[in-house]
Length: 463
Image (tube, rainbow, N blue to C red; front, side):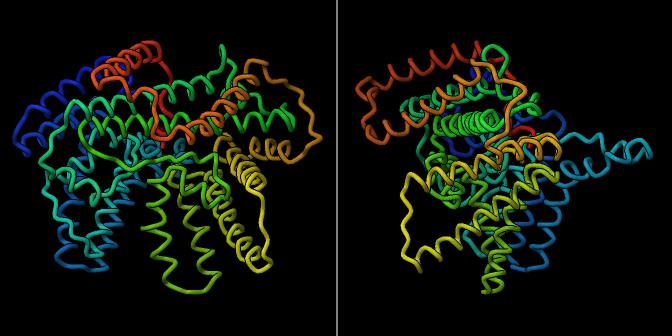
């Protein structure tokens, strides 16, 4: 992971010092942008040219939309952004079957996905939409470049809105040591969450979620559900931990980013789950896709169809495959069914106990992980068959270490949620001076970085 190695952490701290003690705001912005550019180049290499082209195009096209709110101009801007994203993300997959038949198809199939393009493309699109709607956004090119290329968010989000970031960039307040302490605390939490996600994936010593999925053909009912629970927590800790790390890193520079996860596994309905999971993307889909399309017609069938379509786009955003399309349609169908249930329950004055509502939500969301994680349709069908058949018996047993790891993780997570709700705002470390807390978080994070610096790459980098 780019942030979790000693050299980037030293570079981040030196950048923070430069920003902290540079009085001129424009100069501070230039330092942040230069550091962000160097960081992206160290990860993405020559793809920084694609990032720069996206920044320049969206900035000037957004300025044009601000002065001339034209629908054809908006659609042109959308087409350019989606075309750029599709060229690298979807076109190679479409060309793959013909790679051996045509040199051109082989070249297209060999295209490499620029790191973070799915995230910063959506940020550029949100800027165009907001300018078209007439929001008061007048960034300078320097401010807009920071918005798109800001080092903490450029690789894997959270997806930001310029309306949230611009006032902070224009604030006269500079990052202080208290900001660094608070940010380091959040980074510390993120690092430990990521480490737990990696542990679930690799197992103890090497029999985790990845090992179990590779041998999923022989799993029975109990084993499949244990695997789904383990994978749900793996992707949660990995992605939510990364988001927490990024939010903390930005907070150290006095930039407040929106939360990306809010205890999603406590959700009582599928609707609530998608208001708590990958919130920056969920709300982007809601605000820029679902709401505009849903307002075209007032018919119930139309709105429900748009909801399923929006979630299908959500799935395809991850990857252009039948499995991700089916996963998105499945999630959209759950949301539609929940709407029907709400109307039915309201008419019949039915009340479902919270525990039952939570259990049903957790089960149907976990079942969807089969489509999200499976390598192909045959594997997905086999896993679904076992998951829906309580009498399915295993021919391959899961290691005891994996079983205990998943069960202890689940028990620990829900216990932590229960405890944190009762200790909200009463952190036991608040009595320690800021400098002491900063030293504690920095030291423990440093130890984890050196211990886990060679782990596999973050799950969402491939999207």
